[in-house]
Length: 79
Image 1 (tube, rainbow, N blue to C red):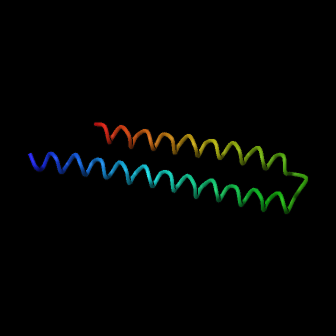
Image 2: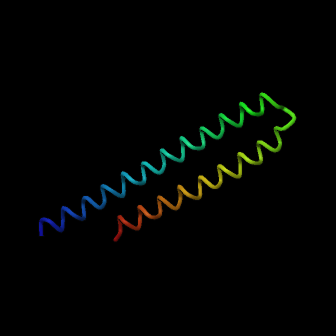
Image 3: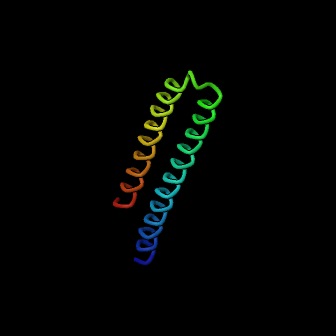
């Protein structure tokens, strides 16, 4: 009985830590993309449109992957 309760609580702790790591990773990734895009636009202002489009697409992909990670953590927490 005690081991079952401990296992459930450790599962919740793991899911919470996983969701936090996903959020931190997404924030770091989008920050890195943003800083690199700003640097590229400063170096070549004529290519700003293409750089901005690529930056937004990559940021959206990172958001999708992070949302998937959070959903997996919620599934682990409720299982």
